[in-house]
Image (cartoon, rainbow over all chains, first blue to last red; front, top):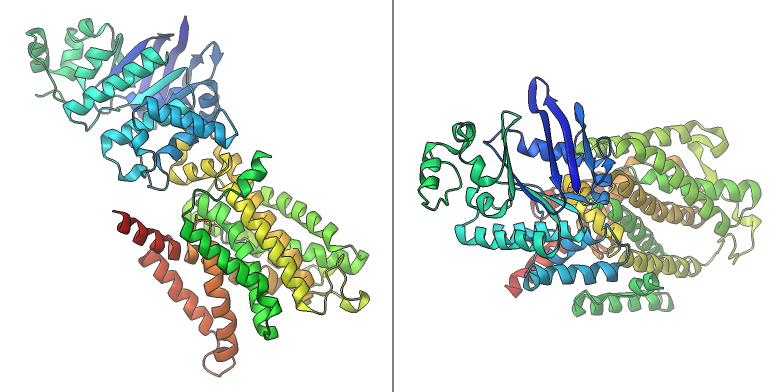
Length: 256
Length: 335
């Protein structure tokens, strides 16, 4: 069953076309990765889908409903939640309060929201941080809080924007486990933008590659990394060589 | 029922805070019994009024981070509604106050619909502009006495008149505003933990993130603005009955708007006790400075200099005000 159907989406800023005629579908229960070099239009694509800005042309159908013209908070209420790459936490809210903000989308009752937040904190194994201020936590923990907060809204589709960026390999393993948990155990369909190829290769069912605002490839991770166009635009020769010989690649950026 | 219980639920606050708050409140409760000057009495009544204005400002300005510098216009709406209706139709305070609140809320939607599209300094300037426009209208509007203002004919009623709030003994006013104060405090205690309270803090943090969590940012701000305006307008109605003589200059001036915002910021914007601490510092300071120094030649306007110094202190040392300093010290002790 198709959960998200993006049709011929185009978005430009002035003369710069950030998303050019992009079409793809995401089935219920899928885990789709979006990769591409910096400035390829990945985050813009998330913004376009989630209603952060109006798009020039095209259509976005979510769960059988045309959401192209809806505002971002309306889209969130339909069950499509996105996270942000840079989470500017002012340090005003504690971890639990943060998660409760998400929970308050579905309930007006404080006690219900608090109980739900407690459950989510436990599931994400951050209940010991409940009373800490988000701004004071290390990045890996902050990312986990961001995901926990998004899960408070009980989404059907979750858009994750670079949740593994800036983390150590060990921390990346933790994030991978969390994403698997969200996807498998909580049954949420996930689209993630990621530069950490290890994560993309291990987690995603299918990968979409963007370059200069256009979709240049789409398919299974193993297939996509062999695509000459993708190697040229993003991965680089060295990644392809190491990958085909089975050497583990943990570098965040494809090396020249 | 759950809401009512939550009003009285202070369990998340440190016991020390509650002990101090309890002691201060009991002291204020018994204050009228002990001998006091009428000047002290009026200062404490002023303290309660400004603490309530500050609590109102704190909802939108503190928890929501929208620095409004035009809140006095709603004070004026409340005061004028009560004064006009009492003079012309002998309307009781308990009728005119809710009407004033409704009018203030209607006006706040008109103002808020446009100004909430702006952010930061632009928002603050726009709120100033709107309040100055309204004040200018009242200064030329004959129906409300233009720039000379209105005087409530207290001789028309016999004291104590609980319907029209005409008392010759200030203790009645004291008890009434104390009751308002307690209700206001309990309401804010509920508000800060309510869904809207959480949404506001999220909006203050980052509006984009707030939207992604399903929060209708514009509507949340408007609802909160209505809460803030309700506080200010209701106490504005009380102000009319208490001072009995109102004019645009002392009910809706920019000075007043700034003083309200300043108090909450000095005490600690976005905290429960902040506006009360701010009013507790500034109101006695203001009234005694005027009394002791203001009358002497050469020292007129010294209170304004002190406000300026306070603004500089807050912006340079601790944007969260006195309460921010307390919190910082506490956190350091715990660590």
